[in-house]
Image (tube, rainbow, N blue to C red; front, side):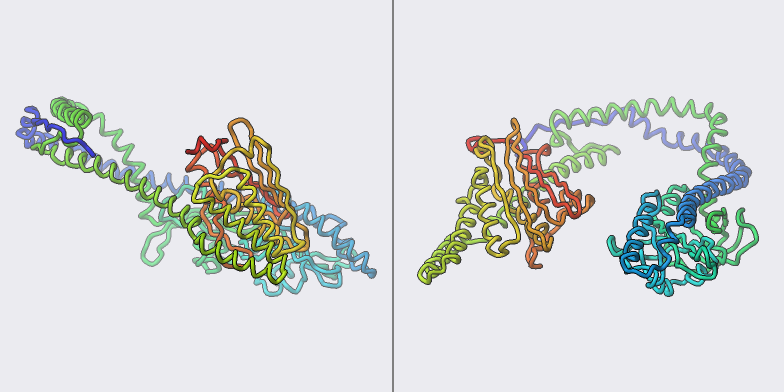
Length: 600
């Protein structure tokens, strides 16, 4: 609660009263100065605007031309890679049909290796060959494809009629078998038999990601109203940030591939700037409405106009500055008085003042109260959210009901000599006993590891002969305490989303706890399916529900465990996830090493 402080009266400055009386003289003097200046500035702007407009369009043309050169350079690199494969005899040897199946299998493998070597080059995401089924033994649908699958593409006839010359396709979407859909453009060419030129062996395609074009074009600094796109020789838009216009026709083509053209588009004057992309016989086009160009030139001319007239007005402004010095001096004293009152007495020390400072003091007072209220509200909301997360996890089960029910089921199993069922029920009872921990928020590492062991034994009964586990702990680490249910969500994630999804392989889960000085480190390692690095890095930065293997329910998640540790121990502690597809996942839990008495 804030104490009630004695209020102190702050009187307006006498200088401020004098300023109010002199307002009319200041206004008249200002008009005498600024009206002639505005007229001169208008005349100067009209003369310079035309020149600046020409300079701006020329600058845009040079920028666009450089972008076209950059695109040509990147596309030429891809074409050179295509030429190097095109001239490689191994390509034709492996596409030449062989009778024995063993030779055709070896041909397919060697051809895939050749294509995969090209994919390491910059800007090439995939090298593909489309050929007749008789030339190879099977298609992996990663680098080798049947030739008939190209017939649905609109540019197929152009590639077939090019006679081996390079044909650049427009932007299209390709669904890769291993990585999913991607927007690409391709460098395609027909492959002919080197000893029988009339015989076609297939089509070679090098795929380039759309983002290569986007990276270069997004760096161009043009007015906000402008539009940049790429057209082919027929005037069809093959790339644009607005995907809805891709495939549409532009204005009638003109003879020149580059230059600046002024035209009218639905009554709006538009400057069209063009630059060639010679590698693919395309054109890079910039459309800028005259209004956007005028705004750009206006911005440039304003600074040059101000620089021209400032010398003519400085003599007149000296007197105004002298008068303003007195005004500002009085205002500063008043503001300093307000600030001093806020610092010493808080906003309660302010009375309702007169003059224009009433708004200032009212805003400051409101701001102080509002910021304090927001901070308190945010803190309460954060604590309630954390408490709700913990209680929702810990209070889902009624202990007495579960214990009584499990005990009844256990005796029924013993009476019917179902020892395996009895053992499983006892394990489940131990699991609930360890997870509830009599309502305590912290448990010993030994108990937390025991909870993991019981959980894994239950899962081994559900999924026999599918995985093994090893749990180890150093003596010093065993005596430490950690937040309850820290390891179980991680172990569950390793089993259900790593081991269980790796069909046909015996999984192994290793859990090791050790103490390094003041740091307790627990490592959970599995040899499951793993994940890509981008997904692994996002698990700790984004809260996401994870589905169980059965497809229903949600796990506590690595994100919540990590946030819980950081909330209790600080930002230097938490989880680290390392994973690779097909190699498994390692989760390292770092906590502050504490004994049980330190948590009380």
